[in-house]
Length: 476
Ligand code: BG6
Image 1 (cartoon, rainbow, N blue to C red):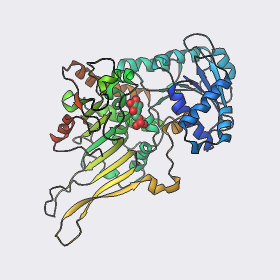
Image 2 (tube, protein in one colour):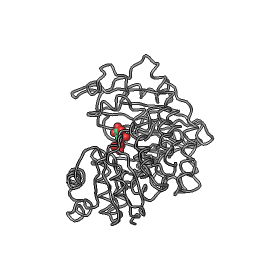
Image 3 (cartoon, rainbow, N blue to C red):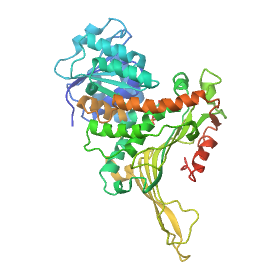
């Protein structure tokens, strides 16, 4: 279904995110027929450049980032024709009037700030001063949304000085992932799981976001962030919220976001003893410390946490979270491990693991339910675990087409649907929780434990679960 005609201004239009993600995603929406004829994309950046030169650079970006099979000469031409360019000096006065002249009064207006976060406030102010921002226009920002609670509050204050909360779209690209949205469908469109979705039936939950890549080329940014700020405060927190939240009354922005916020506020403060930090060493390839400037850096490229949610639904059921760079493979999953049957009528079987529901977010998106069956044969009533396995690719066949997160999110901005965007109070609550741990780490003399690249993380992470009589799922 096509969205309404729009003017989308992308600040930072020559940058990596715009070229790699935003414009290729818009192209795909154009190809899918969702971006209407009356849509216009206006690139804004510092460089003086003609419209034609910018269009040429976008053609090149599409060639690089959209597979050939998805490109047709006609669609590329139609897409590039709707692109315009204005050189804007975001900290000065140059270009704002020209930009003003390009925007139409009667279409949806959105400003995507694909720039350094230090410029968010300045641009918001300029948009307001120059009269470009209207009561209906939207502003889109993306992480890092602050570095801690104080800076997040400051950023929110700057944005809300000129825009209402309903106009602010804070992207967490994990919420745009098809399988993350599927988590809500799984929980709230199936009668099967919800009655069991609580501490009475669930032993614990494991959320894993493992990456095989390191911090190559991003050392400068990453060393100031670490896994906690880069992944846990935002993406993993969102996965935790969607897994743990109460059913919202409606699938509407504030219904959903209210429930997520309640989860964050119910998190127990987390202390060093319930955490493990790791840093990958060099082993044939460059280690973490070779990618960053500070040779003594204590920044974690891996973190594992034991998190408790203090509410009626979850009291006593820990959530174990882990994420890291340079691990064995790229794997994101949520594993819900159910409690054992209350009383076993069968002989003990030492390796029984019980039921588990595994929601695989990437790659190989799908769901596995681990079941117990009888081991075939005459050897008595022996039990074994088997997977009841469904990959979305198999289940959906030709219809299986997972759009990039940005395709969904940019179209939601145009539609004016904030359900998959973070509200300011959510971001602040997540920082408040994160900050306390970051402060403890900072005061601690310990270094992150080093771990081998291509493995499953530091040994101490195993101990974090062992001491509770549990173990992590394998990273294959
Ligand atoms: C980004 C982080 O937000 O998410 C990166 O800054 C990380 O460090 C990336 O690699 C992971 O996203 P995805 O979509 O590849 O799982």
